[in-house]
Image (cartoon, rainbow, N blue to C red; front, side):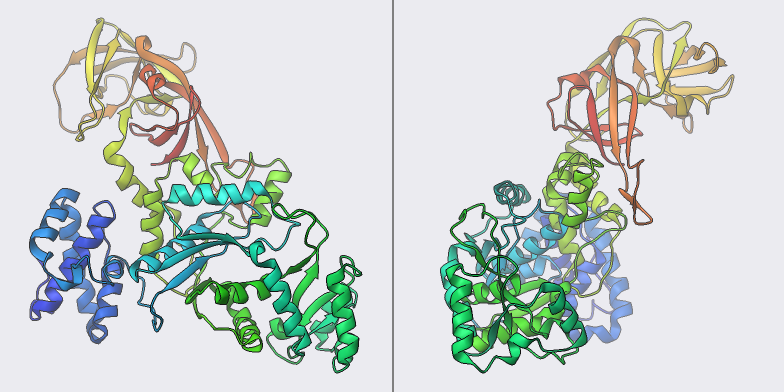
Length: 588
């Protein structure tokens, strides 16, 4: 394999580094790497090359192209034989994993890095959660640290046991293995004590104002009467006791942080830290009615759990000041906060609120509806979890709010499933093709053009079927090849009345540039339906045509496949079998 030249060939260290990064990344991501991944990593190691970035990119393109032309076995062999002694690729190096993806290095001062993924069990996890937890896990593994899965279960109004299980199951499918699993509700007594402490110490107060009045005063930057009585410690202690002893009920009292009502950051205008919720908790039942908000629980739990790096999406940017202030007031250790952008796609919602409404309104089947981007939906649709991980890592850690094309994820998934997926024929909206001098025969077809996935035997008579799309493109006297069968001459076309095309056998020669079409044999076919998920929104409105159903004929051998088996219908696309006579379209 040729390496980089010109700029990089003058520096053997850089030359080897670029090749090693490209090979290692490709070998760990199903044989494929990309320019952005290699560029990001090389610049993090050699920032001085930024001044020659245009030349550097061109040189990296050469390497990436060379690496991607190798098969996975060749990549691994070349990597081991050429770079096995490099410190960069030393498995004992604490930065081994950093070199395989574009995540920047962390600022590390503690002896062990601890990250956490804190989902609320109020719905099924989606691809945005996948990005967060994969980044959390990658950093934990890079620095030989720990990953905590912590269920942020402090709002019993929205939480269900079903969602705890869904999160665990989907993370397991994704290949994420937390070192510690816990619930925020496990520490409710500690959170109560710290809530009382921050209030008793004068950094928060009990507010009994009506909720709408609180909102108005916050917008108008006006302190409420409860804060005005802030200096009366006896008065505040009495109200605090009532809040925790059950005297107050839901919506009658809350604990608010004593912030700055003049702050331009509205988050700091005396936000809620605790509220009363009288709904049963999925784990604790009716034992607890006073619950912390995420604003209070997150920093406290992060500190108590030993989290060193709290990775949060950019949507929490305005809440970072509150996060730090709470820990300062409680004199608790402060983790480093690292931000990154959310992962979203055009016309494909990830909002749990939107998804719940679609389910409640009967617009979609449920959390695993194949049009969604929940992990259960992507699994049902046939995406490989390794593709999701590779896709997330290819995006890197950035604050830029971009919506990557969904086709990028499809492309990564295609490279993974293509070598292990059998090919079969399917014809939609079928039209009969009658071969006048065709004979009964049997033909052996390969299940894959290159991989060793076996063969199948198909019985063929003079009656076969082709897709209407192919039929309407045929002309009289045209010569056409029926793929992997033989060549025919088109004699008559009647698509309106008899809906039949007649043809005559020509030969079995492979003729360059001859039109090729797929087919199914009358003796070897079954009725089959394919469900095609499409963008669920158009112009911010639900797309009623977002789930297309196509019917046709498939080779009957598909009925022998187990449910959840990927298959590529030739010239149609990749699908995954579901029910006996149904498959879900994955992508082309």
